[in-house]
Image (cartoon, rainbow, N blue to C red; front, side, top):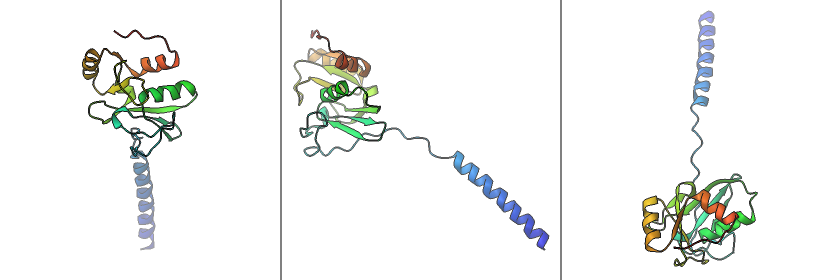
Amino acid sequence: MNHLSGYTSRKLTILAILLLILLSACTAPASEPQPPDIAYGQDLCDQCGMVIGEARFAAAILLSSGKYLKFDDIGEMLSYFKANPEIQVEAWFVHDYTSEEWVRGENASFVRSASLQTPMGTGIVAFKERAEADKFAAENSGVVFNLEEILAMAVNPKPMHMP
Protein backbone atom coordinates (compact mmCIF):
# COMPACT_ATOMS: atom_id res chain seq x y z
CA MET A 1 0.00 0.00 0.00
CA ASN A 2 2.85 2.37 0.81
CA HIS A 3 4.39 1.53 -2.58
CA LEU A 4 1.16 2.57 -4.29
CA SER A 5 0.90 5.95 -2.51
CA GLY A 6 4.48 6.84 -3.60
CA TYR A 7 3.53 6.10 -7.20
CA THR A 8 0.37 8.24 -6.94
CA SER A 9 2.30 11.09 -5.31
CA ARG A 10 4.91 11.05 -8.08
CA LYS A 11 2.18 10.97 -10.71
CA LEU A 12 0.43 13.96 -9.10
CA THR A 13 3.71 15.93 -8.96
CA ILE A 14 4.37 15.31 -12.66
CA LEU A 15 0.79 16.24 -13.47
CA ALA A 16 1.10 19.47 -11.45
CA ILE A 17 4.34 20.41 -13.24
CA LEU A 18 2.78 19.76 -16.65
CA LEU A 19 -0.23 21.84 -15.67
CA LEU A 20 2.01 24.76 -14.60
CA ILE A 21 3.92 24.58 -17.88
CA LEU A 22 0.68 24.51 -19.83
CA LEU A 23 -0.74 27.47 -17.90
CA SER A 24 2.41 29.57 -18.34
CA ALA A 25 2.30 28.90 -22.10
CA CYS A 26 -1.31 30.11 -22.20
CA THR A 27 -0.75 33.55 -20.73
CA ALA A 28 -2.72 36.23 -22.50
CA PRO A 29 -0.81 38.07 -25.20
CA ALA A 30 -0.03 41.73 -24.65
CA SER A 31 -3.24 43.61 -25.28
CA GLU A 32 -3.60 46.41 -27.79
CA PRO A 33 -3.00 49.86 -26.31
CA GLN A 34 -6.27 51.49 -25.30
CA PRO A 35 -7.17 55.18 -25.51
CA PRO A 36 -7.49 57.19 -22.31
CA ASP A 37 -10.65 58.26 -20.61
CA ILE A 38 -11.09 62.00 -20.97
CA ALA A 39 -13.45 63.97 -18.75
CA TYR A 40 -14.59 66.55 -21.29
CA GLY A 41 -15.05 69.95 -19.75
CA GLN A 42 -12.65 68.99 -16.91
CA ASP A 43 -9.38 67.47 -18.12
CA LEU A 44 -6.66 69.88 -19.21
CA CYS A 45 -4.54 69.81 -22.36
CA ASP A 46 -0.95 68.76 -21.63
CA GLN A 47 0.34 71.31 -24.16
CA CYS A 48 -1.59 74.51 -23.44
CA GLY A 49 -3.37 73.83 -20.15
CA MET A 50 -6.81 74.65 -21.52
CA VAL A 51 -9.87 72.50 -20.83
CA ILE A 52 -10.48 69.68 -23.32
CA GLY A 53 -13.99 70.42 -24.47
CA GLU A 54 -14.82 68.50 -27.66
CA ALA A 55 -14.16 64.84 -28.44
CA ARG A 56 -13.95 65.32 -32.21
CA PHE A 57 -10.81 67.48 -31.80
CA ALA A 58 -9.20 65.69 -28.83
CA ALA A 59 -6.08 63.57 -29.13
CA ALA A 60 -3.78 61.60 -26.85
CA ILE A 61 -0.38 59.96 -26.69
CA LEU A 62 0.31 56.81 -24.69
CA LEU A 63 3.92 56.85 -23.54
CA SER A 64 5.93 53.66 -23.15
CA SER A 65 5.88 54.36 -19.38
CA GLY A 66 2.09 53.88 -19.44
CA LYS A 67 1.34 57.57 -18.88
CA TYR A 68 -1.19 59.32 -21.12
CA LEU A 69 -0.81 62.84 -22.46
CA LYS A 70 -4.11 64.44 -23.47
CA PHE A 71 -4.68 67.29 -25.90
CA ASP A 72 -7.58 69.57 -26.85
CA ASP A 73 -6.49 69.77 -30.49
CA ILE A 74 -4.52 67.39 -32.75
CA GLY A 75 -2.21 70.29 -33.58
CA GLU A 76 -1.42 70.65 -29.87
CA MET A 77 -0.37 67.00 -29.76
CA LEU A 78 1.94 67.66 -32.72
CA SER A 79 3.35 70.78 -31.04
CA TYR A 80 4.03 68.82 -27.87
CA PHE A 81 5.87 66.16 -29.83
CA LYS A 82 7.88 68.81 -31.68
CA ALA A 83 8.94 70.37 -28.35
CA ASN A 84 9.64 66.97 -26.75
CA PRO A 85 11.03 64.68 -29.49
CA GLU A 86 12.70 62.46 -26.88
CA ILE A 87 9.40 61.09 -25.58
CA GLN A 88 8.90 57.37 -26.11
CA VAL A 89 5.50 56.96 -27.77
CA GLU A 90 3.70 53.64 -27.45
CA ALA A 91 0.57 54.75 -29.33
CA TRP A 92 -1.13 57.79 -30.84
CA PHE A 93 -4.88 58.32 -30.44
CA VAL A 94 -7.21 60.71 -32.24
CA HIS A 95 -10.95 60.95 -32.66
CA ASP A 96 -12.72 60.39 -35.93
CA TYR A 97 -14.11 63.83 -36.75
CA THR A 98 -17.49 62.47 -37.81
CA SER A 99 -18.22 59.63 -35.34
CA GLU A 100 -16.05 60.93 -32.47
CA GLU A 101 -14.83 57.38 -31.81
CA TRP A 102 -11.21 56.86 -30.82
CA VAL A 103 -8.92 55.79 -33.66
CA ARG A 104 -5.26 54.81 -33.51
CA GLY A 105 -3.34 57.70 -35.01
CA GLU A 106 -1.14 55.22 -36.86
CA ASN A 107 -4.22 54.16 -38.85
CA ALA A 108 -5.95 57.52 -39.23
CA SER A 109 -6.03 59.97 -42.12
CA PHE A 110 -5.57 63.62 -41.17
CA VAL A 111 -6.99 66.64 -42.93
CA ARG A 112 -5.51 70.09 -42.56
CA SER A 113 -7.55 73.02 -43.82
CA ALA A 114 -7.32 76.74 -43.19
CA SER A 115 -11.13 76.84 -43.20
CA LEU A 116 -11.48 74.47 -40.22
CA GLN A 117 -12.24 75.95 -36.80
CA THR A 118 -10.42 73.80 -34.23
CA PRO A 119 -9.90 74.70 -30.54
CA MET A 120 -6.38 76.05 -31.04
CA GLY A 121 -6.77 77.11 -34.65
CA THR A 122 -4.51 74.44 -36.15
CA GLY A 123 -7.17 73.30 -38.63
CA ILE A 124 -6.31 69.60 -38.27
CA VAL A 125 -8.89 66.81 -37.88
CA ALA A 126 -8.70 63.03 -38.25
CA PHE A 127 -10.75 60.34 -39.95
CA LYS A 128 -10.85 56.58 -39.53
CA GLU A 129 -11.39 56.02 -43.25
CA ARG A 130 -9.19 57.54 -45.97
CA ALA A 131 -12.19 57.93 -48.31
CA GLU A 132 -13.96 60.12 -45.75
CA ALA A 133 -10.82 62.21 -45.31
CA ASP A 134 -10.47 62.66 -49.08
CA LYS A 135 -14.10 63.73 -49.41
CA PHE A 136 -13.87 66.13 -46.45
CA ALA A 137 -10.61 67.61 -47.77
CA ALA A 138 -12.15 68.20 -51.20
CA GLU A 139 -15.16 69.94 -49.65
CA ASN A 140 -13.04 72.08 -47.29
CA SER A 141 -10.00 72.99 -49.42
CA GLY A 142 -7.85 70.69 -47.30
CA VAL A 143 -4.89 68.38 -47.68
CA VAL A 144 -4.81 64.76 -46.47
CA PHE A 145 -1.86 63.34 -44.53
CA ASN A 146 -1.02 60.11 -42.75
CA LEU A 147 0.54 60.17 -39.25
CA GLU A 148 4.12 59.98 -40.49
CA GLU A 149 3.59 62.90 -42.87
CA ILE A 150 1.84 65.11 -40.34
CA LEU A 151 4.50 64.39 -37.70
CA ALA A 152 7.24 65.30 -40.19
CA MET A 153 5.38 68.51 -40.97
CA ALA A 154 5.18 69.33 -37.25
CA VAL A 155 8.85 68.58 -36.61
CA ASN A 156 10.10 70.26 -39.81
CA PRO A 157 7.48 72.90 -40.53
CA LYS A 158 7.36 74.11 -44.10
CA PRO A 159 4.86 76.48 -45.61
CA MET A 160 1.91 74.45 -46.76
CA HIS A 161 0.17 75.17 -50.03
CA MET A 162 -3.55 75.18 -49.48
CA PRO A 163 -5.43 74.50 -52.72
